[in-house]
Image 1 (spheres, rainbow, N blue to C red):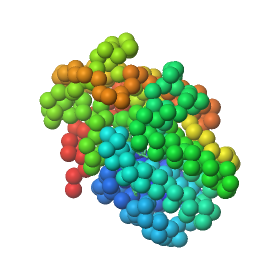
Image 2: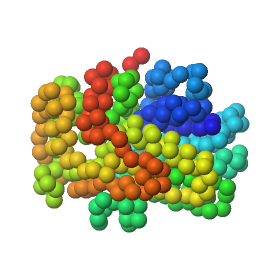
Image 3: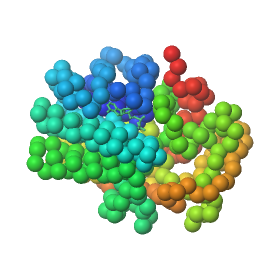
Image 4: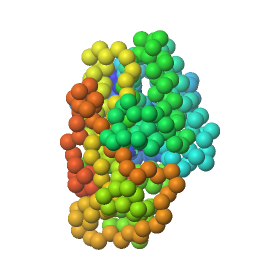
Length: 340
Ligand SMILES: NC(=O)c1ccc[n+]([C@@H]2O[C@H](COP(=O)([O-])OP(=O)(O)OC[C@H]3O[C@@H](n4cnc5c(N)ncnc54)[C@H](O)[C@@H]3O)[C@@H](O)[C@H]2O)c1
């Protein structure tokens, strides 16, 4: 297949592009580098084998409908994996219009052009944020959908738009609801390097391990969890990339509808547990300071993974030690991210 990967220079997009390439698919990456750099494309290409399949890149803002249509005119696409979006929760609270414009606008343009060019397969990057505060654990796909911030609402609205289009057009879609992607490609050459400040825990912990940050701030140690700190479901980015390849296979095999599927490890890891693992993997003590809870944070969440196993044949293979070790290798070799 020739697969369009939007947001293909980003963290999950670049790892998925490589996994698709390794599965033999030709790929066209598009990105506007709003939160990434051309060096991520170079790094993906450096790990690819040109004799296996094609890996092209086109710089496009998905909010520019004409530029996007030109990509569809140039390539005979069979499927799309749509990663391109803004994803910082705090920014989405402060700049909701920019978030709705980008995340919804890019999807609407994409769906319009997919229908026009008869491309009927879509895998969409959704998020566990669509659930908001879960009422029961593990969170199943049937849990109430109550996103707690504009970013989460853009993800839910996009899922709803996709389902509406699938109902009336020859389009089938799988929306993958990621839990917390971490880790990096085991080569240490491909990883997470956002332009925007990231508040993700593991990169901050590893910055302390490498001496680039003084301490980790732990937001609350009085939650209703075993050690009082917040608990999240971390999933290795390479496992997540493989889930996309399987989703594409499932759609290519003839699935006709729209469905949402959790992609998580199914295990909860607390902030203190993650710091412990990082201390062991990195071999250095990691200073932290407990401060007050952050407004909007939830105590604990982890995914029910039965649907991913039954519907996609996917389960996470890599554990938290692998996630931290691979992320640490990336961080140690590239402390400033991708550098020219
Ligand atoms: N990483 C996470 O924690 C996480 C969790 C759940 C869901 N997701 C979703 O997964 C997807 C990928 O996340 P990521 O972590 O790789 O983020 P990322 O920011 O690294 O990648 C997104 C890419 O999309 C690009 N982009 C944004 N708007 C664009 C536009 N209008 N036109 C073209 N390119 C555009 C950015 O430049 C970036 O390269 C996003 O949709 C995100 O909402 C991420």
